Image (tube, rainbow, N blue to C red):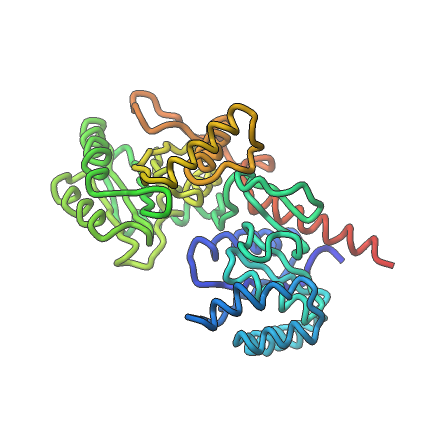
Length: 388
């Protein structure tokens, strides 16, 4: 066997998570000829969600087929069993030929339960909060999570993604048909948003994006700007006000208003790409596209959490704690430093010299989804060959 015959993506509906799974699945299709299917997990809420995902899911690592089926029934997942059964019948494969794949903590229990029920294998992208990586056949985990050294763990620098360098020109053509530009230079700006560690505020827009727009006017560049689902409404309003003031805003696509994903087109069309530091996925996508991404620093949340983060970071720098104790912004800072050390990112300050591109896409170019998929195929075949 040359890898899984069918890959079943379990989607939680979060675009970033789904893109990570799709990126790995796409490369599994290329490398192993796997069929790819995508199923939505049940939308649980309240006490039922808490019990299913945080309490009863703890039994799944040791679950047999019967107990996995019981958990799926209690969690509204029997419809998934029906869908997977149909896929097996239509493609004439057995459960052992299936790889169940997901990203994030909400979909992970369904991924593991279905693998236990059908006798397939389970893969997770990122570290599930309750289950951890141990129960999974394959775990694709960023290095800044400091995953344990284990045969079932593949470390990445950032996040796998669905960016395909071969498709970037087509995506760029679509973008430029929608938002044509006569400018000789095009700059992409990828803006994240608020989370537990970072803030992207209207004041930040005025302090950082206004000077960028002014510099674009001086250099004859047009701006292609997009936000994320985490961008606050008041921040989007500040961007709208700025775009009305500066004609260099060729595109301002607000994620809260438009579901279309312009990021692949931006990466294919733009000479420069700026990305806020809070978005690991956007930084990874830009690097995958062969760009040297310019990191825009944003505001950091204050309070006891920040104080404790910095204290832990200080102890790690002094060697008093291992790196796995980094958390919050120091952990993301460590990841960005790794990107910079590999020549995949630079700071946004200063535009006199362009960082240019990392180079044309080659077999050894940065592409975490491809590398993770190749690892899965190798491990799949190794385990098959080791079976009696």
